[in-house]
Image (tube, rainbow over all chains, first blue to last red; front, side, top):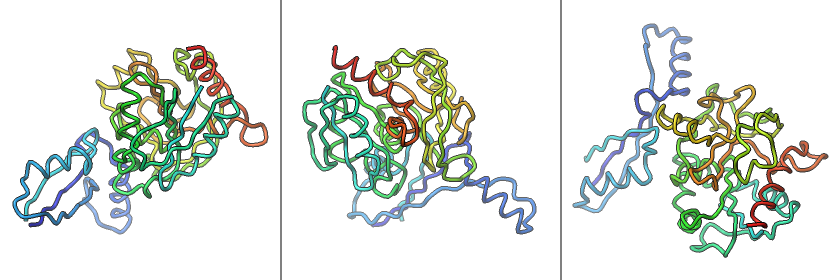
Length: 76
Length: 221
């Protein structure tokens, strides 16, 4: 089985990289970009039957820093 | 005082840290990240560098290494720990210090000597200074933007746990924070490099008081 983990900065945490991307899109002439948040996607190739709870533990312990990041698990 | 300096793949300030500790009089051992236990030491230093290539997040992989289990046990026993630069990032990733270090606000890698204000002299690390002193330490980092939520910041302020602040904030850190102490004041994490400020021929000598103060406190303990 495969799963994707989406990790992104929590709302309220300033994202300097997202702000730079927003600025660059404006420079390219794309108007109306009102906000950009940059995160990461981690693809996991897992033994069949791995529970979402186990994946959540992976996120809590390593894949996300929950001080500043939130995560979303997508089982494929 | 006996000290251990942890070496990760990608550490690059480990030998500078050992030189600074030895210059102050410490007996220093280098410890490899795969070792599961630490030698019997008073202080564990987590050096600067780019452990594991900064993969995933700065310090995240190092924080899961076998030696960090030993580091956590050492701190839980009341041992002292000093994390500088990447070492600070490792200490936040292990949860031994609160907050997190994010990408610098202007996204640039910053490499220069900066002025810091000593925010408290109430720790073994800072007792060689007076609160309000200004010291010059080099910084060299891309991810030194200290972030903590409002409640966490208030706790740090109420407990006098901010050790150093930037005189001119270079990286966007909350409340100009350059270094913080643990609740028992025995763990210090900071982005600037005191170990690069111990020799008049190399970046000044403002860091000497940190290492000498530590030696004085731990040798008398």
